[in-house]
Image (tube, rainbow, N blue to C red; front, side, top):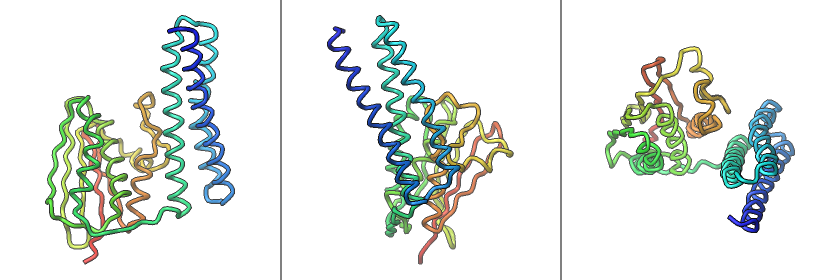
Length: 255
């Protein structure tokens, strides 16, 4: 790679990182302006941004000292930029949920369609780990729900199941209409969650200690519960350490 090409790529990455940082600052300002978020939340986000920003500074310094490995440092810079971008998008979602900007628009639709789209989004990651996904759901089972946001909630729970399940494991999904609610169960054969930690898994930015080095920032389950709660539903968790987890999502039947 020529010096000119390297400089051009560096310029692109640097511009992207600066934009991410600026957008994060702007999000902070908007959140504080409307007094919609607690100081604890702002503190949480500040903590989340410190590591990727510190890494960016470190890699930039290393690139100045070790020009032979610039392509490798550029890959790492790109990963940090991706993380900052993902964090920004997550912040926007949380802010919109907590300020009431998001308006839930429920329609009576086949839940199988919403579920199928969420499953399709996690299949590539599941395939990499050779995780099998089994589904049991009536195609014509209609449930009142916001398709977009319910799909997001289901994806977050499925993504969590795949992340915590070992290679060649399994994820079982079943949908059952009950008298008052329709229940969507997502069961995995992963490592499970210790009883003393189960109360914390729905907290924003919570991550299990064993996977701090893996991808993610720990808001998927928080968002999932928020979205389902906004539709007058709820989520239950059943889990034992070493025996997998089952998340049960309940959406109210309106007829």
